[in-house]
Every structure is written in C-alpha cells, then in structure tokens.
Image 1: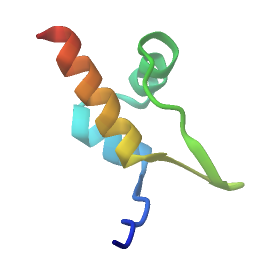
Image 2: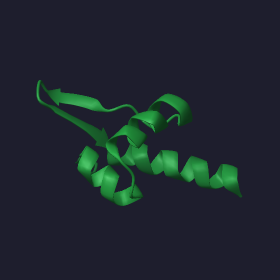
Image 3: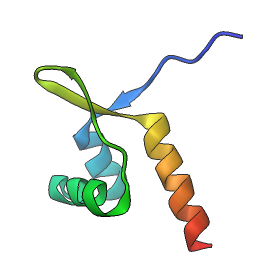
Image 4: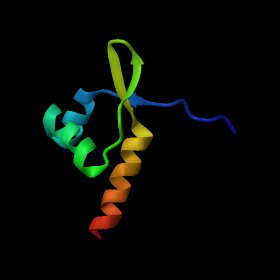
Length: 64
C-alpha cells in the first residue's frame, strides 16, 4: 500500500484555520505543545498537517 505524501502547511494556512494571529501560533507552540515548524529551505518553514491534526485530536480528547 503506497504511503501518502507529507503535506506541509503555511503559517497563513494555520492563521486562517484557527482565526488567530501569527504571534498566537508561536504562543501555542511555547505554551500548549503545538507542533514545531520544519525548515524546508532557508526561507521556508512549514508545519506537517498530520502533526497539526494529531495536536487537535489530543486537545479535543482532553476537553471531553
């Protein structure tokens, strides 16, 4: 069974997804265990969507 390719998302994608500012994303990383970004090239950092979704699931389980 072929493995799905990794999907990386931008900070803009995250800002729109959560309706928060860039600063809040970095606060979530610092204070709430939000996944760290991956440096793909010197000018490009992205987040793995699977890691973001896993963080969301974990948060949802803890809120139930």
